[in-house]
Length: 423
Image 1 (cartoon, rainbow, N blue to C red):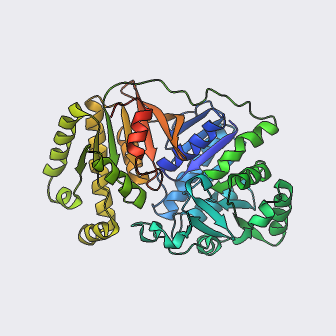
Image 2 (image 1 turned 60 degrees about the vertical axis):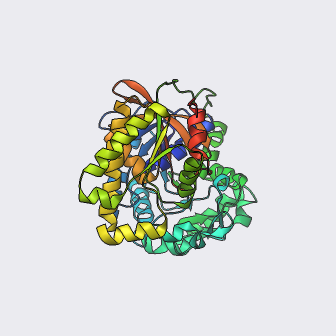
């Protein structure tokens, strides 16, 4: 194993895994820290569900993943978080980064959530989503991790006991050697975590080349774009052109959407505008009795005979806030996740073998409920979202685990069509 990745949610894991596979690395994603040996691959991505859990729990799970990856021989560790730097003043990015650095015995690591292909860029330490600052984007109203400050140095500093510095884009634009020199200068100044600017893929390639020998990289998936070529130049990797091939599957298809991001709202609206079957989850009805979940299952299974079905809890910020006000943030989320997990089991029991799940928390709930242990990574549907393949009851299953913020308005249909589903 060359690279061991610790991802803080399930969609983020498939995001970075897809980036590596696209550059020719044989990559396997494991769900949680495996009890047995790691699979044989150039890169192994450990998918955790630690983005919004208590910091101490996130640290403990991340260290367990680190121990397993190092025991399997990983040359480098990559802590993968969201390209919108989802976190709070308490964590979890800073505490996990601190713990990994301590365990690896390193005193410096970069922090770079940039993913230009999906509109996430960092300039002078400020994170942009498209043409607006993170703090002016839809992430400002995120129900769990509202991001109201785009200055990543300022966001990260309260989370870590290390001094946070900045590697500005003019230095990155000059190439890998100037980046190495600047990082060394920052280390001398006592900086431990360095927010790195990147406004284009060329910047990501430069950062990867400059940091490919570091014990630890912390980043979104973007920096992974440049790691396979950097490893190949070092003689560690022979890229494999067939690394993204999956076993074809047949049968019905479905979409489950728990994310309330603006992107997923647009995707649900586009699906409905196309006249396709869409069933909405009502969290308040779920809280009253089990009948709502049972009715949804019955309707979804009956609709499969007519084609792919979407079941969604996606709602706008005002609706989400109203539900949270009545049920509480944690209970509202848990009820929806449990409903989606039960729906997934029922759909697979009815023969569904191509399943799209929108939302990191939802994807985690579904994959855990299905008891999936490993996922092979296939071709990308869009930047940051590949098809993956697991085994359910001994049969191949295709899963697309989509971050809520990713994909265009017609993503659901595009994903299913790529998987051979007729719409």
